[in-house]
Amino acid sequence: MTTQQIVAKLWNLCNVLRDDGITYHQYVTELTYILFLKMANETGVESKFSDGIVLAKGDNLTHEQEAQNIDKKVILSYSWDILVKKSGIELYQYYKDLLRLFGSYCIGRVREIYQDAKTDIRKPGNLESIITAINELDWFSAREEGLGNLYEGLLEKNANEKKSGAGQYFTPRVLIDVMTRMMKPQPGERCNDPACGTFGFMIAASQYVRDNTDDFYDLSADEAKFEREEAFTGCELVPDTHRLALMNAMLHDIDGEIFLGDTLSSFGKQMHDFDLVLTNPPFGTKKGGERTNRDDFTFPTSNKQLNFLQHIYRSLKADGKARAAVVLPDNVLFADGDGEKIRCDLMDKCNLHTILRLPTGIFYAHGVKTNVLFFTRGKTDKGNTKEVWFYDLRTNMPSFGKTNSLKKEHFVDFEKAYEAADRSAIKDERWSVFTREQIAEKGNSLDLGLIRDDSILEYEELPDPIESAEEAASDLEEAVDLLKSVINELKALEKLR
Image 1 (cartoon, rainbow, N blue to C red):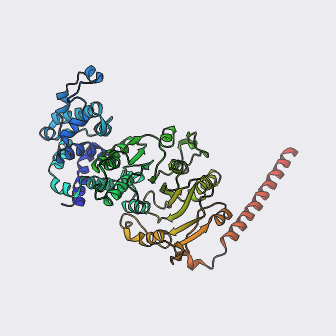
Image 2 (image 1 turned 120 degrees about the horizontal axis):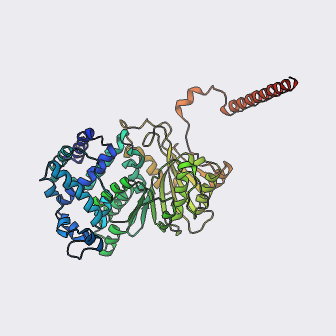
Image 3 (image 1 turned 30 degrees about the horizontal axis):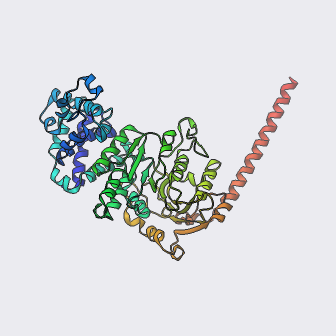
């Protein structure tokens, strides 16, 4: 069986949970608990988890454990092989105890994955059906295809289901791969995603390094250890999504720190001095329109994506090599006030060398327009951006969505232009450049680089939109003056009564 077929089988199990009122997101989280045990069993590292992660084996119990009178043999008696032999109420209770014990008395990734875990399944029969179905899958094929790829496929399936609402934290794999290839993560670099979702960007970055170092075999033992344990890190705000990120990282042999916290709070100040940032931060405004409480931001605003942008370029090393690729919505390119100040600060501190105007419909709500900003942190804080190149992958493009997904071939011409030694030699109508002076003349707006839209050519005979708008504004002013004069006349009549 292929990974795609196994993912389809796993996804079809969600039908079992409909009677329990389980949402798509709850289902993936529930599967994470169960798949962790099965995958640990399949890879033969279940005992390793016990040796290295469960405190109770081979060591004295902690004061907390002794107070709870938890016997080490009790903790170690929870495994997949025992789980699959139980049924009914006994299975249900064993499973609930497993979640509680692993979340309370383990350390490392196991405890993080099961922290505060609880089951949303209410019927023991449904739990048994899922465990049985998972146990009967073709796990030989799953191992051959890669358990990490299987789990990643499950997360992607969840994101593509509109009802799941998971699209908010899942970036299309093809876009992640393009951004990663353009940034070229190198061995020894510290990489970060400050809004990591399910950790897709960092997994892609790790894979890029693996592919270019013969799976780390070209590196020394210390260098390989750094790649596994320190090179790739992230932060996620939502507990359940954080849990999925931990599982995803573990299945891809990444042990780097994944914080559970708010990057835009004071918590985020600890994330700095990175060589590379790859991310797709959440869009929108802070609840209640409040400004961020990061006291190290020069321009605090209620706009989350503008705050994430500030965090990102400030978190890069000021060495002239540290770089970032960030997905951001159109409003970041033209927002007034703090938006303009932040763009100017970005272009001062960094060389904002490329902006990719993305097509609509590839993620988020229909019609949301997004871009990828590519920039490199300068050694100084002034004058680093001399010119910005734009690639328009939006205008005159097909409509993307579930039935017509974005593919690698859609980015071929962009990658050619991006990688060109002489960018000005590229002859492509979608490829254009604006100097820093030209951008300043346009009010420091970066809403540039879009080509002529063929779909509106037939309306060329329509009047100039600026003239039409000015005429409409004039008419409205005239109407307001007329209303004011009527009000004044009515007030005068009122006084005569």
